[in-house]
Image (cartoon, rainbow, N blue to C red):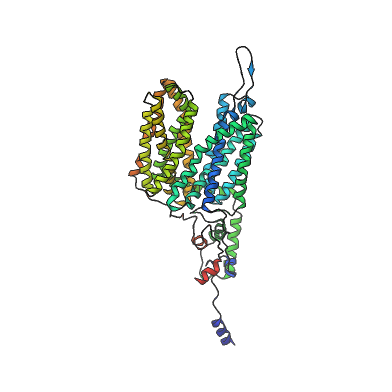
Amino acid sequence: MAQSEQQQQQHQPPAKPTQSSNPFNPQMTTSPISVSAPNPSWFSPKRLLVILCTINMINYVDRGAIASNGVNGSIGICDDSGICSAGSGIQGDFKLSNFQDGVLYSAFMVGLLMASPIFASLAKSHNPFRLIGVGLSVWTFATAGCGSSIDFWTIAICRMLIGVGEASFISLAAPFIDDHAPAPQKTAWLAMFYMCIPTGIAVGYVYGGFVGDNFSWRYAFWGEAFCMLPFAVLAFAMNPLQLKGFAPAESRKFLEPNETTSPLIEGSDNSNINSCVIVSSDKASRSSPASKSLNQLSRFSKDMKELLRDKVYVVNILGYVSYNFVIGAYSYWGPKAGYSIYRMSNPDLLFGGITIVCGILGTLAGGLILDSVNATINNAFKLLSGATILGAIFCFSAFCVRSLYFFVVLFSMGELLVFATQAPVNYVSLRCVKPSLRPLSMAVSTVSIHIFGDVPSSPLAGILQDHVNNWRVTTLVVTSVLFWHQEYGIFISNSDKFSEDGTEEVSTVDRATKKPLFEENTIEGAQDSGEA
């Protein structure tokens, strides 16, 4: 009898191996586990680009709208004869001082600077596409709140929340584009995304002026919220995309038991193994929120150290800061300096027109040129160095000449070249770090260019002008900052780390279940491993 049973066992087909060989998880050893990949995403690469560009456009339409006369308005004034005119827009309705009015425009920076590193860090434990949905929901709620505000403090808080919503988008959108853009057009796609910045601001001026003058400034904010709402819903309704270097949420959940188990002890029976699993699982379930926060903070600190030790990244960001320092000063003081030096009849229209046209054409040209010469970090630094130095020479020369005609020609050429650095500089920020650090690299980049770039440039240029009382000297000193840019990056050894995966985020399970994002796939991990 025993011999016949032995023969039957020998003739039985071998059981298919399970997805994991870890004997400490009883669920993984009793039956095969089927791991199904997400259904194919509706987001094709081109659809994704259009959607991200539209979101970016709406975001900067808001920047232009709140600065427009139709929305921002003016405070009521009284003339010498005692006749008073009613104020208009936000400033007139809430009777804001010029200081309070200026605070509203820059209040979004508070939320942006605080939330950008947080969203970038959360991308390691939460789906990045869902995080964008959370940010857009906050942005929509805050924009609608601006339209419903009752005083200075309510609208100021809403403007800060707009920065929180924007933070999720600016740190994660560029990595998504970098993942899904065609290889020969990656920088051109980034250029199209960043081209929406000057275009959105220009559209915002027109939109805010039209709505504010014909209806009410409140309707301008409600209209923005209405336009953004479908994209916030879309980010939650559709199957989420994954970023390169990050494990899918399903894989992270699948790997959690492995992180709490102890090594295999030879000679242990199954009862001891199961008891070990139960004890370790109970300990894991009882982990406090404080310990999770500490782990998150420790991981964020580790990533920041790795990022700041990267010489290529640091040099690139320092150059980007100098670019934004000059552009920020031009945007704020340019019309006033132009009127003082050249007696322009309409400096706002002239400077605005030059910035919009050169911003669109220059940004697109920079991306297309880098793609045409083979997009690499070294080539990007060469383009950044050449375009910035030539742009600085043209802009510097523009403020030296006395003819308005020559100023317009030289300044336009200078801004065209300076804006051509927009796509390459962000390409370097994405490619000089490993994929899992890209959201944090974009967040730190955004925080840095605002803290050290366009935010302090305007007051510092104003202080300089108060001392020298000569706009030509002030503009020349500000422009000279451009001469220190990314030229040092050419001499630093660099490598494209796009193909490097983070050791924390990507595991053998991920590689076994990872399939193209835009194809129909259903994976059964146990069956695949058995057939292999």
